[in-house]
Amino acid sequence: MTTQTIRQPAVAGMFYPGDQRTLKHDIDSMLNKAKPQKPRGTIVALISPHAGYTYSGLTAAHGYKLLLKNQYDCVVIVSPSHREYFKAISEYNGAAYKTPLGKLSVDDTLRDEIASQSSFIEISARGHGAEHAIEVQLPFLQETLGQVKILPIVMGDQRSEFCFELGNVLAKVLYEKNCLLIASTDLSHYYPYDTAREIDKRTVGDIERFDYEKLMDDINANYAEACGGGPTVAVLSAAKQLGATDVQILHYCNSGDITGDRSGVVGYLSATIVKGN
Image (spheres, rainbow, N blue to C red):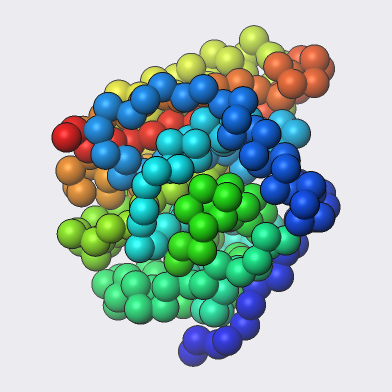
């Protein structure tokens, strides 16, 4: 059952500024600083990190800056579930997500259509309550696309079957719709700097080659690592079925590059998936 609930900010003041003016200023500053490569076609999807803005905000800005002259009817954000495990994929059942910059309405028509396509997909609040991986994307969307509708999706289980099913459903439902896909993910977690870069190189390589099946295999074999690996596989799969032809890596770094502490780092990636013009 859907509700008129508005999902309140859970990590404002922690992952990003809770004050509207400061938040807007910080995002605008990161967007101004980012110098992403020009996309080689029409943007179908982004891969974007979800750490605190101090760590991954500039990386994220490389992708979001490319949206400034674009318009979409809806943005579908696919996220891992960091705090709640459940054997399903959850589309938010409320009316909107709120940030210090205002509310973004949930596209309930698209939500219902997607849920009708798979028994794995439910309309519920499971996974959404304290999850940061969707929330941190939203202020960037608000500063680049304005009051666009969103569809927040949390994967409570990232097994291969769920990833490929979600990719197939998204491709089927979004065909000929003007929607942007976003996979919210960080890369390896808490390895020494050089080890992290080696692991991330394999993960980024699979993504850059647009080989989501190899990425899934490498994650399952612990050869590659990404906390949002499942969302990334699903979005890459959907994007390819929607006609995307190319993945462009826009920015990579890890927390050691930001803080100087290289003892245990987290990797961050921004990439765009495009369809040739």
